[in-house]
Image (tube, rainbow, N blue to C red):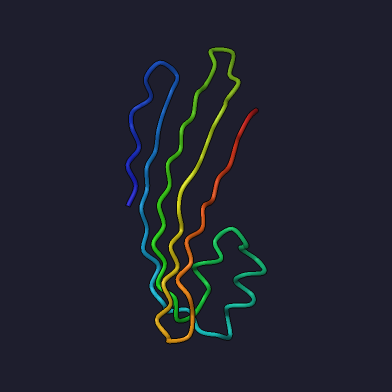
Amino acid sequence: MQHMRKMKNHRSTTTSFGIFLMTACDDIAFMGLFTHFTGYYKYISDVLTLTGNFTYFKIQPQGFRLGLEIGPDLAIPTEDGRDTELLCHYGLTAG
């Protein structure tokens, strides 16, 4: 689910929330992690993952763009013997 605000004064924000179910099979996990490292939680079997994200962008009148992205990833195992993990992802953009 994603919500993007209309750009005002050359600024925009986006918020998103996602739920990734434990549907990946073990055979595809390695290839998924190898090819899409930033979306690792989509390829781990037996883990329910909740993700959130906040993005802020500002575009200068000359066209220069600045951006910030931050959010949590909560990985909840569906098997015994594994720990719940809380991770934070972030990013900066300029150009």
